Length: 85
Image (cartoon, rainbow, N blue to C red; front, side, top):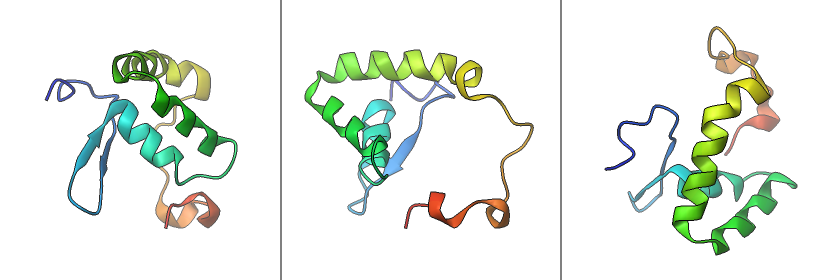
């Protein structure tokens, strides 16, 4: 797909094996989070091209805004309340 070359894109696999990319995947994740993140679902009303543009803007700047770590957190070191179930 057109997103295959973006390393800052996320994928979300649905139970019916559909794969969502970029803003669709981010909104699917947000739908499973607590407020206020769940409120991001309202962006679903925007055209996909606008949402994907916004997704790319955030993806390019996320390290500046949220910081960078040298390695991924180990599952045993993660607060269980931050995991989707």
